[in-house]
Structures are given as structure tokens and as C-alpha cells.
Length: 321
Image 1 (cartoon, one colour):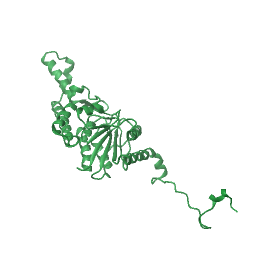
Image 2: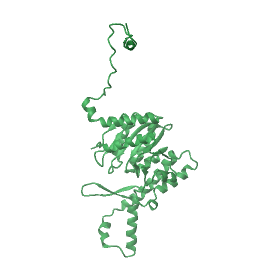
Image 3: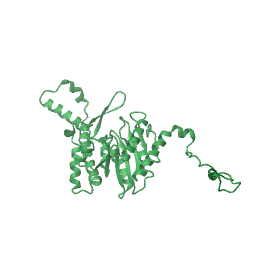
Image 4: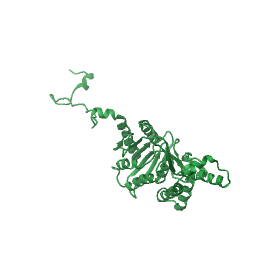
């Protein structure tokens, strides 16, 4: 005779039926050792997929160390990141960079825009800094997404003046180089030039002066074109607004320092389309946590990290080397 407490022990399965197997444990497609070695990378890719599900947008990431410049070496991995982005997608680029080659920044921005096509959308997520050429990439977006730590910067280009004894490039703002040269010219005309400048003037390449002037014009023209074609395209007098903003971003007299901070509020005051996320916003928390893990993965100041839900290039990747 069965008591009331025994009712739950009675099986509905016919006698002799083998017990159902437990749910199988998920097994990664990679071999155990390889997965263990790369577990941090796979965890970041899980975070990327979670952010994509939350926002309904595709997410790719470019995070560079403090001494890494945007160069032609970045194009190959960017093509990899965009490999599975479909035309018409809503695309986000999480970007952290101190800047670099203006021409290559243009290529990166155009790669993203061409991949999604005219009906797609493009935003740049700036968790920390997108300076100089990085700011130019932002200007090719429909909007820039920021938080409290985020900053852009002036777009006056940096010019490689020479190399040090170890072969590292020494860059200076183009306008600062021209301003310094002008000071020397004025001192010469007044008969007050120090003899210490004579060896430097002997080595001066006149073509470098012309290059600096053209680089300044090029940066401003590119900013104007990006703003008018993308970020401000739906605004009245977009061409006029684009020229005004580009001129301000290229104005060394206003910012004085190439590293001047243009935070989200100041960017909005300039006329840029900026969305500011609060610190407790769950999407911002997702971006910030992902960025923190990516920054810690950089193995050196010159390292770069290229990541998406499918492609992930290690931080020590150097194309062509």
C-alpha cells in the first residue's frame, strides 16, 4: 500500500525503459588545450555577441596601444572583421586609438561604409579616446556613442619629421612645425636668430614645408566631406555646417595642443551628432567591460587588437612583418 509521501516516486515510464540521459555538457569546437590558451579571447567574443543581441547591431572592435598608429597594416585585419557583415547592416565600430595616417583612416572609414551600403547604418563607439585620425573616422559615422570617459581630439595631422637613434619615428603636429619655422623666419628678418638654429636650417627639406601645408588642407577637406556626406547629411545647410566644424577641429589656435580633450559635451557644442550613455546604462557597462578586457590583452604599447563575433586577431599581430 502506497502512502501519500510516496506518490512522487512513481514513474510514468513503462517498466524496463532505460533512464533518460542528462543534458550533455557544451563542448567547444576547439581542442581543450587551445581553448584554454585562448579562453580570454573567446570570452570577449561572447561579450561581443551579447552586445549585438542587446543592441540589434553588429559590433567590430579596433583597440590600439598608446604607441600604435593607424597604418596600412590595419587594412587587412579590418577586411577580415567585415567579412561576415552583410550589406544593409547596422554596424558599430568600437574604436580606441591615438591616431595615425590620415589616408589609412579614410580607408578604414570607407571600408565600413561601403560594406554596409547606402541603406546601412554606422556608429562609432568611443569608450576612451579616438584622437586625431581616429576622430576623422568618427566623422564618417552617423553618430558617435560616448560615456563620461570618452574623448575626441583636434584633427590637425601629425607629420614624421625624423627618426631617432633606434629607428622610431618622431612626429610633430604639422601646424606646430610651420609655426616654429615662421618664428625662425621672423627672428632672421629682425637679425635676432640664434646661431644654434644654423645646423637645423641646413638640414631642412623645403618639400617638408609644402607637405605640412597640404596635410592640413587634406585633413580639413576630408572632415568636411565625411560630415556633409554622412553625419550631417539630413540637416539643412549641411555643407556649410560641415565646413565650419572641420575648420574648428583643425584650428590649432583654438585647441593649442594636439592632445586637447574634446569630450562629449564639447563635441555636441561643435555640432557633432553624439549620443551620451550614462555610467549605469547596461549597454555602456557592456562596452566598458569589453574595452577593459581588450586593453589588458594588449601585449605592448605598439600592439593592436582586432575583434568581432567571428574574427579575432591577437594583440601582437603585425601584418607584413
